[in-house]
Length: 471
Image (cartoon, rainbow, N blue to C red; front, side):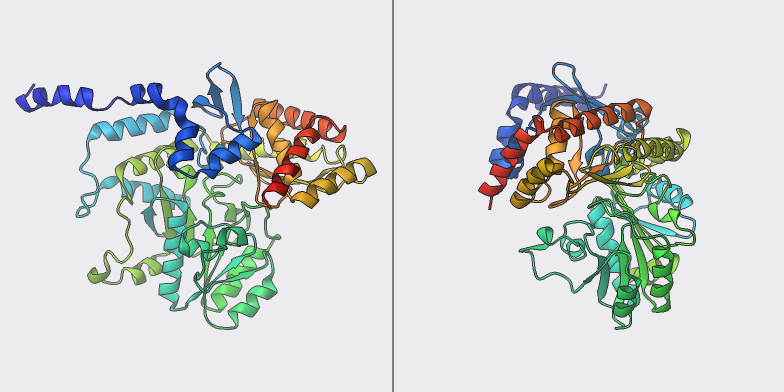
């Protein structure tokens, strides 16, 4: 042991103890958020009874202090593709920390970014290069910048109800007014209806469109364009010298039963593709913008432009190691094939319930990205209760289903978007028949209660009062 090592040991040992800090102050979690962070989050969680205290997590489950398990059908909005704390990803992160790499020098070329880019591009054979950032919204920002620069045009088209992120550029192509309100002026982009080729053609004729950005399945509402839309849109865009950007931040890396969501349509080869979320392994934020060679070469056209688009933490060793581990697990554990099988089982079992429950209007989606939509019932008694909820705020019935799923059945889900009667299921990609059985049994029990006029409606009255108070 060197003198320097010996001298540093006592100060290092006593400087910071994470376990001690959590033991001493972990119980203050909601108070700390109220005081120092977004104060509306704990308020919302208290109101709907989601103010749980989870002690640990593993795979597709959370556990409270009493050892009760909670099934996660939300996956951190899709971040936890492999579930929580996958052992292969954990080992990769331990290994990369122990390696003490000379990371982020900014003036060298480390091997891990190149290796991860190589792995990603192997699943994207028509694409050639990758830029690594830190999030999905950064991946979208990069794609917007690249498209505008290489086409020399200012305008991006996007679809109504789209969600591409919340930074200023990605917010400009966000199809929900609730996210945009109060943040103008934004970039001069234009919304078109999802699946409307005539609207796309009209905008392209104006000659100022750089690209169309589209989610193969929209996260808000779990809405997919009609069959044939993506290849036809691609042909129209290229005819007008504009680009197709596929936002695969949520749909990518196996979520829909193919590696990318756009791969469900034959012949679709986007010019730029955005990925993030599941690539992180649930640990280290990461985003990637994949593109064709000519696009990258035009953006980075000379040594003077070598840093024209960069990110301080982009390509960091921890994120790259996590991404490599995720792709390795996906290949070795045949994750995509499992998603196809489990997704079909879950969707078919839910779809079979549409004839049983008059308020269950539709079950849709691909793979393990499933939307459950509720609609106006036919019977007079239920119709009057439905009308009461709708008058207060659209989306309250879906919230009435989500809350007992957690409170009574210990299953975490989400309403798919503001003012929507849709629940979205995006569980970890590793779930199987056991989790399908648990969810369908619980969902059936909640729907039975709702159609029988049970306790779920008492909570509905609470939601109505809250909605009226917030007006």
